[in-house]
View 1 (cartoon, helix red, strand yellow):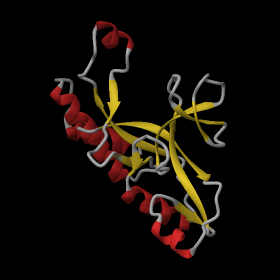
View 2 (cartoon, rainbow, N blue to C red):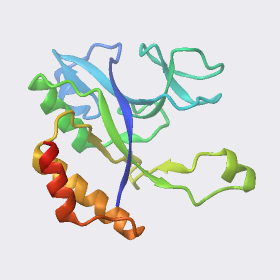
View 3 (spheres, rainbow, N blue to C red):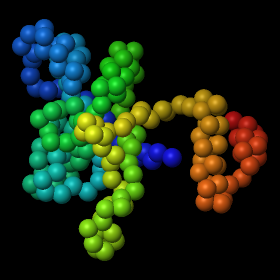
View 4 (cartoon, helix red, strand yellow):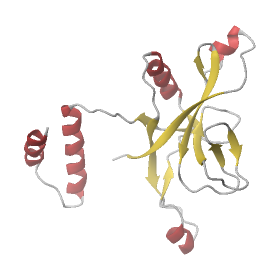
Length: 185
């Protein structure tokens, strides 16, 4: 079972105007809206350390020297100037299509895995117990957070949850869960 954590998705103008039409169509890492280039940033409210990249007040990216109130840690971006994991092309295409339909995506799920690479006991106790899944091409796995789910999607989630808890010997029958759910919906 894949694990996902919720994050914020921020769209920011790059601050530059394309030089030519080729810029609009050949720079696939940026989002083009009304002929102006934008980048996507996935941010978190996790603690920020010196040297991390952050968005302060969602204005522009910066390297953190001293963390300030209003900083949001950047975990991935379409901005190739940042030495961070990238947002995969399929999500960029999805984002573009949804934006054209008037659907603004502001929250996403990002895949993570449990850490097994602790440096020492202190790291295991004080450090994060999870880490981002970073693919070989330096991209992360993203899926949008759906605000509204259909009854079928909710049923599928309940069955998935139940099967996951069954592995831990705490499950109820799928039939019981679906009956309970149909009473509530």
